[in-house]
Image (tube, rainbow, N blue to C red; front, side, top):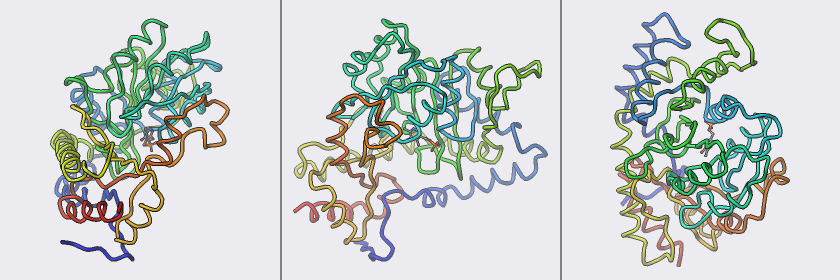
Length: 368
Ligand SMILES: *Cc1c(COP(=O)(O)O)cnc(C)c1O
C-alpha cells in the first residue's frame, strides 16, 4: 500500500496525471497546430465544434474562452435584457452567478434538493415572478438536474432554459445528453473538468440557428456575417491549440466517465457501512466530484491531510455567503447545511488506480 508524505500530499484532483496518460495525443495536437498557418478560429476549432455537437446530438457549438464566458454569451445570445430575472441554484461554482450579473441580469438564487444537490424544482417554481425570463440549472458534480420537472415548469411559464453543464460532460438522462434539454447550454474545459484542456476553454451549444449565429458574432467582437457590428460582443474564442487537444480527448470521454462511475460504485461498496448517505449512484451521472457529507467535516479534513490526502470543497459556501450575491438569495436551508458538511474525495481514475485502498482505509480511520 502506498503511503504519502505530509510534505507532498495526494491532492484530490490532478489534471497533470491525466495529461501524462494522453501524452502521445497531446503531442499530435501540438504538431498539427504548429504546422498550421491559422491560430485563431481555424480548422481545429471547427473540427472540435462539429465533434462536440455530434457527441451531444445538438446542432450547433461555438468554442469560447471559458465556461464563464460560455454562460455570459449564452445569456446574451438568448436576447435577455437588463432587469430580467434568472433563477439559479445556491450551490454552484462562482462562475454561474458571475455570468448572470456580468450579462446585466438579476439572479434569483434558490435552494437545492437532496440527494444530488441540484436545483429544487419546487423552490424554483415558487421563485417565479413576472420578471422571470430564464432558468439556469447546474448539473452539479456530474448529476443531471431534474430536467423533466424543470422543462415542464419552463414550458408552463414560458421561460428560457439555459443549462450549466460545466461539471457534466457526457452526463445524460436515459441516453439524452445534458446540454440538449434547454434552449442553450454552457460547458467549461478547465483542466480538472471531465473534458479539460491545457488551460482555459469553453463552449456553448444550441439547436437554434439564430442563437448560434448570435454566439458566433458575440465571441468575435460582435462582428456579424455581413461584417457589421450591431450588438457589441467581446473577444472570447477557443484557440486552435486547445481545440486540437480537446479533439484528441473527446473520443476517450465516454470510457473515462465509465471509469469514474466504476470508482463511485467501489466507494459505495467500501464505505456504505460508514455513512448514512453517500453521493448517490445515478444512471447517466459522470461523477465530476464525489462529495461526502461529514458533520465534523473540518476535523475529518485535517485528519485526512495528516495522512497525506488533501481533500477538496465543492462547496464549503453557498452563494449566500458571497457578498456580491447575498441580496439575490432566497432562504436556502438545504444548501446551507450541505455547505457545512461537503468534502470531496478523489474520484479521478488516474489517482485511484494507484491509491484507492489507501484513500478508503484513510477515510475509515479518520472517521473513527
Ligand atoms: C467550472 C465551472 C464554471 C466556470 O467555468 P470556467 O471555465 O472556470 O470559467 C461555471 N459553472 C460551473 C458549475 C463550474 O463548475
